[in-house]
Amino acid sequence: MKAFSYHMPTRVVLGKGSAAKLGQYIQGERVLIVCDPFLYQSGAAQKLGAGLEGRVVEYFHEIEPNPSCQSVDAAAAAARALGAQTVVGLGGGSSMDVSKIVACLAGSQGSIYDYYSGGARTLEPRTVDLICIPTTAGTGSEVTNVGVFTDQMKGIKLPFVSDRFWPDTALLDPELTDSLPPAITASTGMDAFCHAIEAYWNKESQPICDALAVEAMGLILANIKRAYDDGADQEARGNMQLASLLAGMAFSQTRTTGIHAVSFPLTTEYGASHGTACSVTLPAFIRISGEGAREKMERLCAALGYAGIEELAAGVESLMVSMDMPVRLSQLGVREDALEHIAQVGLGAAIIQLTPAVMDQGTVTALLRSIL
Ligand code: NAD
Image (cartoon, rainbow, N blue to C red):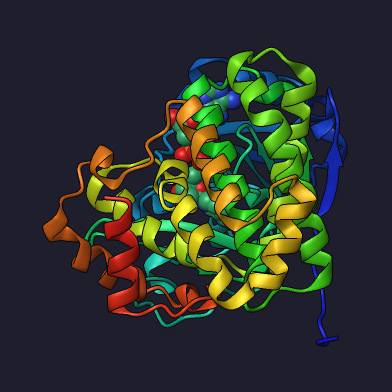
């Protein structure tokens, strides 16, 4: 067996009502809650803050999907002005990712551009505590050392990996996902499926991640349509949140692969949500995964109740169609003459080479053409 190591230092607390226990995990008196406008306008952020009696709580609630470097710097300025001792990221991956770097920048005068997108500095040790509370199921960002940011000046979206980004605590309360509308339940849930399968077929895969990933995929296949059809189905919501967590723990070690690499231009240039941009190529990547991981993929198919790789790809595709998700690139507005360019941008992300198939200009363009 290939040697491996597994390191995920975040304390995980999961269960109904766990968000109300936030105060038990907070360090210091001054707390900045980072979230998006929906979570502020719905009152979810203030409900969380109201439970922190005796502490000074402020909110930065301007986080947009696919968060920009400008938002990061604005949130970091708010954390400095408050003298935050704990930063809480409440939301989907966008808010949690921003909270990770804000907790790092809060203790310095720097900008994200000093460290990312051409910046040469390395993040100093983090002095501010970091707690992530997911409200989608989801990105798994609460248990990864990754933040994904968009440099609007360059028009690129790229992951930023740093061991400073492991949250101290991840609080998972399934009730926070009850308000997700069906379309976001579907797209974020299929993002979690992509994390799991990309960890599993990854060239850097390892037994602990495989076990987490297989469990996550089984939970998603059994629960995503239930959560989509009935957002109040507590069992399905809880299982989706658990699946997202397990998938995050799996890809936190392996990274993702071609699906995520190609998703970046589909988001920045076509405006597709992250989960949609990933899952639209999922069936096509499943179909080519046998090239480098046939025996392993056949074991996965058997574990998930499919006769083979083609049956799994077709099953995932019809599940997506049943949730009104796009399964062709043309549904996102992509035209034939853009395929070479999308492939080229995807090939610029190093993770694409972790895919268990030859990834070059010709093969990636052909894959994209097969789902145009
Ligand atoms: P998101 O955070 O961008 O949120 C998407 C939408 O869902 C927003 O409009 C938000 O208001 C809404 N929303 C969130 N929670 C809600 C709730 N409970 N009820 C109703 N609406 C709610 O979405 P996401 O898919 O969770 O995150 C995507 C981002 O995370 C992307 O930038 C992606 O690249 C990144 N990501 C990061 C990691 C990581 O490990 N750090 C992993 C995967 C993806």
